[in-house]
Amino acid sequence: MAWQCLKVTCLAILAVVAGLAAMPARASGDKGPDAEPPTDVSFISFQSPNLAAPGTMLTIQGKLSVPRHDERSERHGGHDHRKLPAVLILHGSSGVDARGDFYEAALNAAGIATLQIDMWQARGITAAGQRPAAPVMTYPDAFSALAFLAQQRGIDGTRVGVLGFSWGGLVSLGTAERLYAGQFGGGLKFKAHVAHYPVCYAWNNTALLAAVHSTPAQYGVQWINLTGAPVLIQVGTKDDYDNSSQPCEALAQSANAGNGGIVSVNAYPGATHGWDRLMVPIVVADPFANQGSYFSTGVPPAVAFTPDAEQAYQSRARVVRFFAKQL
Image (cartoon, rainbow, N blue to C red):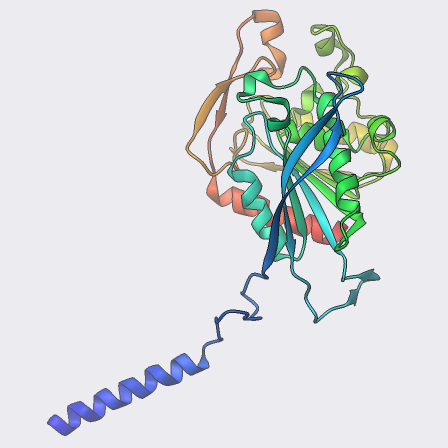
């Protein structure tokens, strides 16, 4: 009996060892298909024109994450892979939060460099209510970041996309408009744009902007003549700004009529504003919510940020696929 038990034990040990031997290695430097490529992270700064004080500059700080060179593929699809594509990531009104890192990790794993910048720190903004008076005030930040990326030795400046959330989504859309690219781009433009819940009803909305004594062009929400770069808009059907996905779909249809069908919209059923913000739920008040009802009622509507992990991961995968194809 003792020998039988020992024999069984030996066989079990051998089975475990054989199983371990058959598993792919996960040691340092592993190149297995599931291993994330190592990434070089640096904290950088660059100058951006301060439209609030013409003739002065802001110092914008950010985090640059660059996947290390993969020797297996020098050239692919006509591109020199010694230089990587990159995506600029732009935060919402609440400032830098978990969304940036969430998308950054997946983009880096796909071999795409990322630059997250802090538009608020440069302006001394510490709360959403202190945000600039108009989205256009931060458009120079995005184009200055594009110029910075184009100067980096390991990045292909002709293959830079931009991803923005809420306020950052407004900036992502705005940089796709020829008017603002001409004003702030210095001859550069982004190759692809992703805008998450960018308050679609406000774009080209002359009546709304009259309430704040501005025009769509001045405020930064003219969207008529686009640069030609593809645009993906993602929005939840229960977004408290647009109240549905319909304003984004209408904006895309209007833009596509004169720009060759380059705008697509993906709607997430039941998702609120900021569904991909995987942090504790919050509710904020914003005068531009509920399609701007504040300007007739005087009451800032509530905006729910309810995380939806399943749809957040779907969204992240779609963003990576979009940039991998377009860049």
